[in-house]
Length: 249
Image (cartoon, rainbow, N blue to C red; front, side, top):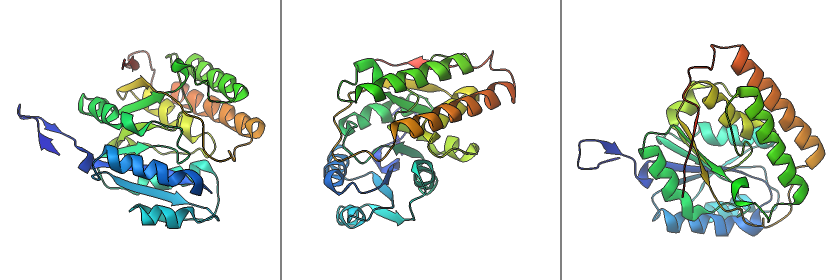
């Protein structure tokens, strides 16, 4: 953390942990870690929670990442471990399949320094044409479902690229597995944290996806319904909450 000259402290990449769950991503992990190192000038900490059998963990360690190995238990279990392990004040989640633009990390950090608690990468507003059409339609449906249930417009509930102030991660009990990506934006929104979405490009993934679009999609929809209804009606009214801000590039 440094002083911006006005007496206000600002976060630098030395205050950032970039975290991800990894599962058999040997093909892409080198590119992702190299990009993070280049963009952050080697200052950001990288944490991988790994359940791979293809040597992904070894490659990650060779590139300086901290690797936590665990038995395969699902997306949310891995990411939950990843977001709660670092002690740096800013946590950035990403996927290890090279679909997310690490060159946008400075924009996410800038938004945190502008006072936002959660900065969410919106893939869908840019079209996400590299995403399979069925998945793209499903992700739009998830966003509309969450928006309708919480009464606030969300453009992308299932993105894997977000930045959080660590106190947000620590203040909330996270309960979901497959649906954790949606929970990670729904609960902060409903609890009045300052949230913004930044449109980002989405690249074609390297390697094969392990998420079944039907069973996985059903689990995500179920999580959105459960978390949204619990937050909206099981807690104080959301009518006076600030809601989501829309960032531009």
